[in-house]
Length: 499
Image 1 (tube, helix red, strand yellow):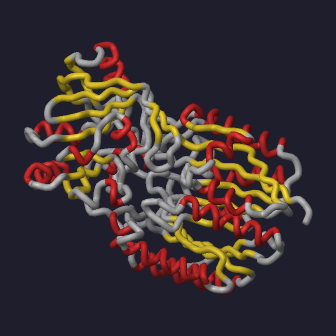
Image 2 (cartoon, one colour; image 1 turned 45 degrees about the vertical axis):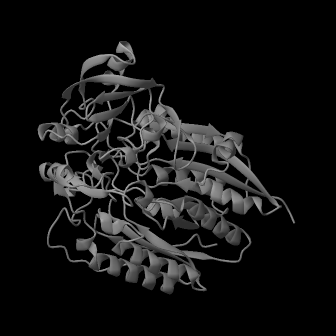
Image 3 (cartoon, one colour; image 1 turned 90 degrees about the horizontal axis):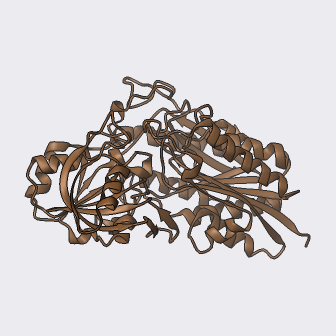
């Protein structure tokens, strides 16, 4: 059997248009060539899932090219920084030489100053360089914004089926299997997309327990049918304020356009019928703290409005301030991003008692600093291994600061807080605290929900689930829940590379 060269590249990042802190090139982990494979070895990522499938075929030569993964989510990318990513993407694809197929691991919810659809742009560049005839399959995060340009340059796509996300590896594996079947001329993918004018957020999106999980199960059932290749939803990231922001249903079939159209419209109609239930139920800040202080159970005060994994700046001290106001005596663990407070801790040294202002370091329109006196308990360079992936994360210089009953883990830069990595790396186990401020909308159940009471706080922030409070200006209107009185009927659009 003749040799087949399959190119692999990756661009994964999610932005929040309402975070005033831009995402710079330095906020990405960037790798080239063989380093891409090393980075993903044993990592459980989409690329590692694709590699397992492709490496099982002896005739396949894997051609790794480029990988840019956001260290965490953040604000909009300045044009100069995205242009550098664009240039490096294009250069590495050109240097790869002729290839027979390509797999791209993408996110779908990023944006640059002048480019609202970076993933679509990178796929467009790939087509220009690699040619119109080779098959391209891409995998996406279900929080992506599925643009027409993305589908116009792909033969097929796959999308996560879980939230919180645990099927990275499986999503990449499914994409690689589709790519090989296209390359072997076994299938002819037809993709159907339906735009649903709805933005959603809240606990019912947890696929293991919520209503959204039932909709995902319907999509999975479609994939098991003889003509089914892939199906799912893109629920968008409501904080990426771009024109195409909304929810999408997508179905990919093997040369069955009418089935793809019908099933995508069925999925989208079922989603639309549930839209009112797929919204967050938030408790006002003052009431949230009152509940946390009277319960006898451990409590997670969920500050999704300042979730760094959703693109927020991480510097809100709003809940801490309310806990102080209500004279909290419960042992409390607090994450914060504040480089000035960290610098003060480093200058004072371990064991020193200092007065510092914490919070409001970046998003000054939303957050105000809180004056606090406490003791520096530890200092670090902020490098540690992810609980979720085992890869190195970098929070910048980090200080653990104690003001009884509060323990603050203060970093210089935001990192993902969808797991407990930052806490564990600095000697703090949330199980040893009565209250933990959790700056993520949802974590895997074993991290918090299995053992403590979860309170979703209506706090200020650039990633608030109170979507009407954010101030969308670019999102095409009308869209639920930003606008009232919508009527809508599903209408699918078909895409095929015509191979």
